[in-house]
Image (cartoon, rainbow, N blue to C red; front, side, top):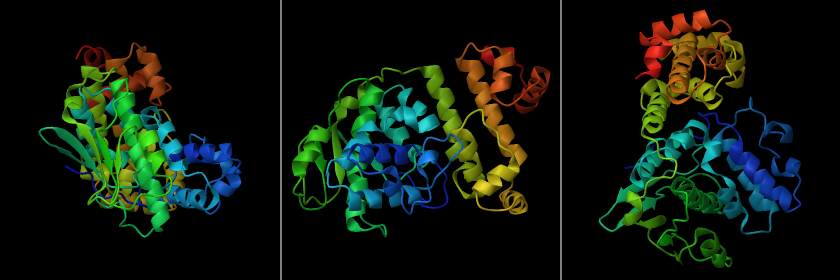
Length: 342
């Protein structure tokens, strides 16, 4: 199975990958202003909860890293500090899944929620489970930047599997479709496995026995609920493509923050009139999307926390609990107590 091809401009993401890379480069003495040059992102924005960025902007920072850094371990160090906790709903879905088989499956299914730079595929064989990166060198980016992104992607996979399993789960083998670079030893240092170059495909191969490992944060109820939320984002056409998808992703990436239509339109570089027209053409509206996000979050909080109804109401943007109860009844046909008892 595979994820869809990542869109470089159509999506908007929190700048957590940019922040991680800028941090790694700063440790090498490279000023953040130089790391971010030409990306359209300033240093004071990379930790700003209200700022969203595109895949293309992240690629611009990677291009700077290749040009400015003399340390070949830069993409590996960046991938190693990109833990799943930084990935919002996507990360929580993976950390709470019930087996590593689910982790592999959901990693592909929800990949579009994770600032994707490379398409991933997963195939289960009798003895192995294999990540494949079929389009690793098919973009318009310079070859050295594409290799940088691939090196980071491999390291992220190893890091994320450790996050989910709660222990070290090294791959059996990492394969690369290019000749071994001078710094080939760095690969095995960070990936903790033998590395094979000049291979037919770019692959990260695991022993199939890891698929039965139970993640250390596995929780059946949370897993079902969070995966349902991710499905709302990416499983339906209205949430996985187009302008409505961008609005959903922006709102879901910052739970509890509900900017007005004018603010969101500005982030999407369009007028409110254009945003309204584009959403109508996709069969939805800004109000409907905000309600959908509030409903998802309210249901999650009520089912998985002991927060009071007043607190949940506040977290999903209601100053009046009575109004929240009425809205919840309209969205789900149930009151807070009924949802908690499900």
